[in-house]
Image 1 (cartoon, rainbow, N blue to C red):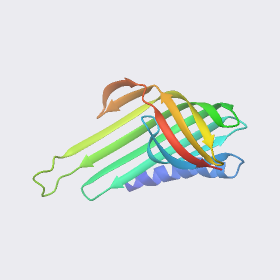
Image 2: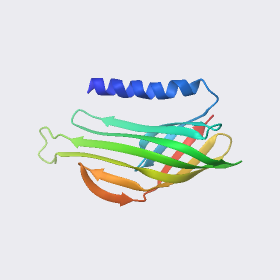
Image 3: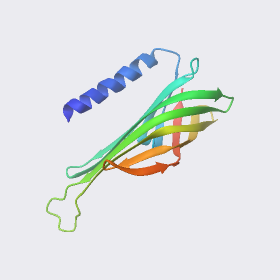
Image 4: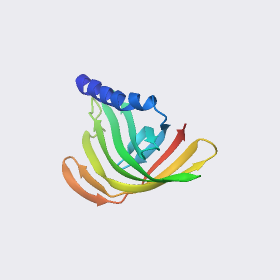
Amino acid sequence: MKKLLLICYFLIAAMTLPSLATANEHAVGGAIGLTKGAGFTYRNINFETGIGYQLTGLPIIRPNEGFVTFGASALYVLNRGEHGIAYLSLGGAAVRAWNNCKDDEYCEEENMSGFAFGPGIGFELRFWKNFGISWELPLAVVFENNTFEGVYPVPNSSLVYFW
């Protein structure tokens, strides 16, 4: 497990560090959605090429239970206006939740994992000076415990501070 986390950290750093040296737009905040994941988010967009990415994740881990989510999206900006942007996305997210009961007769053990992926279209409204709220409608293919659950158009949303 430690090796897997180390590899994930390395991949995130390898994707993020080169973009810090260029004149890209960066954003941090919170996001939630089937193809975005849930939790803290980092987004980077190069408006010269129109290409960007967004990484989202949230670990909540206790001794006998936990919830971990991670999402990654590739973005392509269709139009950048004075008060917002319109974009296409291709994203995927995974979630893992568990509850291992120890000496608790009222507890019910649970283990669940799931993931979703798919394309979407979205827009971001920018307000004040450096804040934006985005809505995205993906066509998410959803699997739970390695079983196909369906295709759902469930919206994603983000609230970010950008610079």
